[in-house]
Length: 397
Image (tube, rainbow, N blue to C red):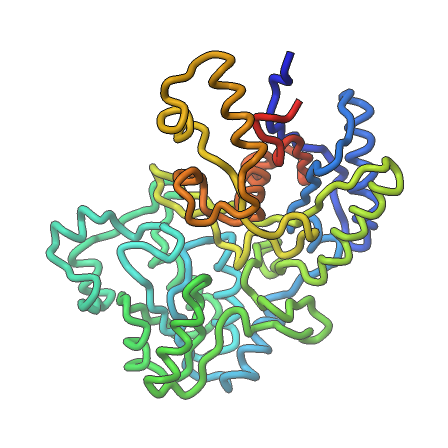
């Protein structure tokens, strides 16, 4: 009988990771111990993935509010700083904002509306329509915003992020101002010194600001790209991908991960004879249809992965074949015809109708989303994910 089980994703428990832990050894041992305890075998092309959080923790990649403040002060001189398009997040952005405010005399925050870049809404689209506001043209002061939309709280967190961010800035001794607009160049009416805090649109924002005559422009990806007073850093992403660790400390996105994933791959091959793929993953790239949040607050889903995880899926759409090429077949004849079609499929199905409807995303983004959903973000205690059968298809026995 043909194998009945396809892709399986397992959360693997691990010890609480501390700075200096040998993650290469620990991850390998956890996977091997789980396989022995749970009675599964490691196979070629299985996938081992680990959260970016445990990699950064093992690296000790942390920085404080004072470290951020020192870098901001060095780059902008300690005067007024514009904070452009930050996401609405206590975990992701509040410590960054605390550091920025501690390194400036005044902070002008420009929020996009009705939502931030990753889908956290200040207010609903329906309210936008009801009030007759044009998000492409209208610039709102705090007073106008309050007059139109009042004190709307986030449906999941219960936070009024406008008040939260302004209070946070003032608590750091800086003056606070907030404005609402969707054209990044509007912030230049308030200051020529700007930190572009958007994640996936940051290059466009920086380009528009510079072409409009901004004095000094940096992105969050350009703050803490080198150590400050011995702090952690990320030379490629700076503060992007950081998370709150304590009230005055952040964990940065991990750096130098390639040797780690390649090393685990080598160790599993040496110990089991099997060639697995390995990756580090952060946020999965998916959207919540109710809260409307697009999960990807990290700059990338996977900061490092082994070579076999590059590229996109090359899959046929079984429903398309069943409804079109083999519409007259059923039962074993249909099964055999589809298996034969899979076995002879082209090495590259790009642009072919038989692949229409398959998910057009990179493998690392798809697998990272599966991993993020498997491990969760709370108290499951499974920062390692082991996936089997991901590269199987209907012909696999």
